[in-house]
Image (cartoon, rainbow, N blue to C red; front, side, top):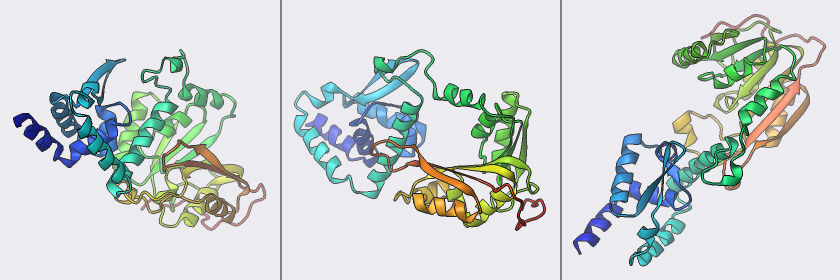
Length: 322
């Protein structure tokens, strides 16, 4: 009875139930579980330790990582009725907002695994040299030297990848702190063809016709006025230059508003196409860039070309950052 009492006290904690629900779907390391649950790593480790102590969770080491999964013994030894109850509760709570948020982040972790070709125990995926990063960099060899504006560059990871094939890259973000981290990363990687600039999405610190490519990667949904942002992105393009947008398809995950400051829950395909055409672009294309079954976050890729004939710009001079 004492053991049963201790077990039920352990399961009375909502966070530990969330952990068990996630681990019932796959195995994860502490870093992945931290991202899924939105908790501090120390807290996740403590809860895992308690669940491991009572035999509900076990750990296994692979490739320098420690992964946690449900223990086979934890489902046996007379605990089958307990797991039947838990499984029923997990299924019943699937529509709850908190559970759907965990599920969305879980699918993002699984997508990240897939796109990085991590094996996670599947020997069929163990192909030496297989890499999305290498493939993306190889495509850069096919491009001519271009001047690029990475608008809403954040900490600069995509900016520095772009710098591998671009002549010059302007990394633009409104946060001084974020730009300092981006600059430090560029210094560590010894990248010298990036110019970091502080500026708002709708007031770019660049002159008309400054770049060949304007790039907005997962930043348009942060804009209060997407039309204004796209007008600015087109303004700084040279005639014949291209706009590239990577953003989310419309979804229902409202928690991203508070966690990431999203102004919009993605864009419908037709709406994104309309926005690009409204900015005066030709040859507009919108297609799915990344999608995983069950994941509410679908990445859209949209592009268009600025007409070769010059037209009067809404903003004829370089914008001063706010």
